Amino acid sequence: MRQDDGTRGYLITFEGSEGSGKSTQISRIARRFESCGYEVEVTREPGGTEIGESIRHVLMHAEESSKMAPETELLLFAACRAQLVRERIAPAINSGKIILCDRFLDSTTVYQGIARNISAEPVKMINEFAVGDVVPDITVILDIPAEMGFERIKHRHNDMPDRMESENIEFYHKVREGYLMLAKTLPERYLIIDGTRARDDVEEQIWKELRKHVI
Ligand code: TMP
Image (tube, rainbow, N blue to C red; front, side, top):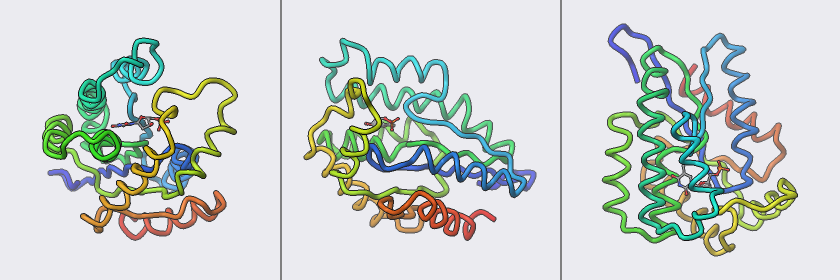
C-alpha cells in the first residue's frame, strides 16, 4: 500500500493449519527484512492487542468456550481483527513498516466459513467490516498435510491442546483444502509454500518469493 508521501507499508500475512511452522518462519523472515534495513512489526491473530489477547483467551482456553456457537466464534475472531487493524496494523502501514501477521482474515474464511460451514456471504461481509480497506499485500500459505500438523502439535504440547487444536482430523483436511481453494481464486496474492521441507529450505523459499514483491 503506497502512502501519499510515497512511503510504502506492506502487510504480509502467514496462513496455514496448526503445526505448519508459521511462527518460526515469521521470526526468521522478520530478521531477514531487518537485516535489509526495513522496520518490521510482527503480530498475530487472534491477539496482538490487549483487547485481542483477552478475546483470544475466551476463544481458545476459557472453560465456557466449549459451549461456543460457530456464529459467536466468527464474531469474536472478527472483533479481534477489527481492534488489531485499527490499533496496530493501519498505523504501521501508514508509517511505512513491513507488518508480518500470523493469520488474518483468510483464517476466518477457511476455519469458520469452510471448516465450520458458515455461509460464505456473512463471513465475507463480517470480514470486510472488520478490516475496512486494510487487505494483505501478500499471503504466504504454509501447506502441510493435516496428519503432519497433528503429529507436530502432539510434540509441541505436553499439556492439553487448546479448543481449536482439539478438532478432529476431518476438520483439518477441510482447512487445508480451504486454503488451497482460496489460493486458486486469487493467485496473485497467495504464495503456496511446501511446509513439509526442512526449516531452512522453507525460509529460503519464502524469502526468495517475498523479495520479488517487496525489495
Ligand atoms: P494459533 O495462534 O496457534 O495459530 O491458533 C489460532 C487458532 O485459531 C487456530 O486454530 C486457527 C483459529 N482461527 C480461526 O479459527 N479463525 C480465525 O479467524 C483466526 C485468526 C484463527
